[in-house]
Length: 285
Image (cartoon, rainbow, N blue to C red; front, side, top):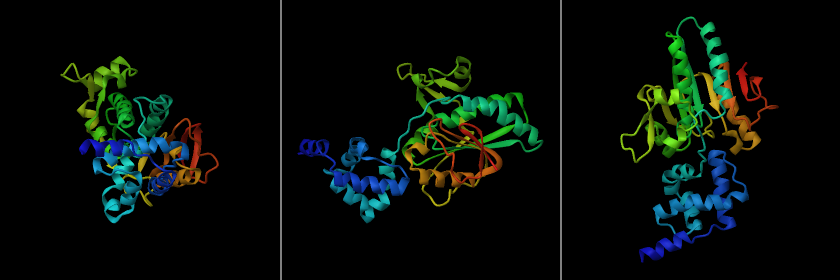
């Protein structure tokens, strides 16, 4: 009987109507645009939710999502499995070079006291970006003793944030990280068979994580930041949503602060309080 139910879930197919109902709702909730070509991907990702809820069809799942109980309990799980979390350590390295060579020296020169740089990694995924930022800032701190920093990492997925907090990664994830940096900031698992590494505590303690949905009317974060990274996030939104998101980010960015976006993204032509410094680097004006 159990095998029969599992087979029914495994063989469930998402109809066009199911897809339209769910993708429209996902867009309204998260801003993530899912064109029709993503139907099979959505079906595959939500199959896990069907299994856990013991629901045998996508119509039944959609009905549940729209129910009072589903609205309270399921939406956060649905967005967990739908959101894409692709990231790497030192991804788009030109940004970290600019941070080291341009942003940080200018910050030190401008701030003679209270040199505590605040950085926001918006859409931080499983933590590779905020820990790369932490490595970059800690290397700078070694040569500038009175400098300090704190990092906030946010993502829509609670599941992925738990991975970020744990900060454990497969060894292959740091294959391209320079050996000197690996030795300083990553600890190998004592279990040789696991082949995992963990970010050292001194960096983990510098990053605070919290859940944030870019579709929220206001961003419930106490700090105003010197630097914001929001990279490879905008590509999932339409242009109108992109402008709304960046506008709300600007409200949390100090005048003179820097915003970094992904190399495949563009905000040119948008009505924003930003001036371009480099193709994907902007200053708040």
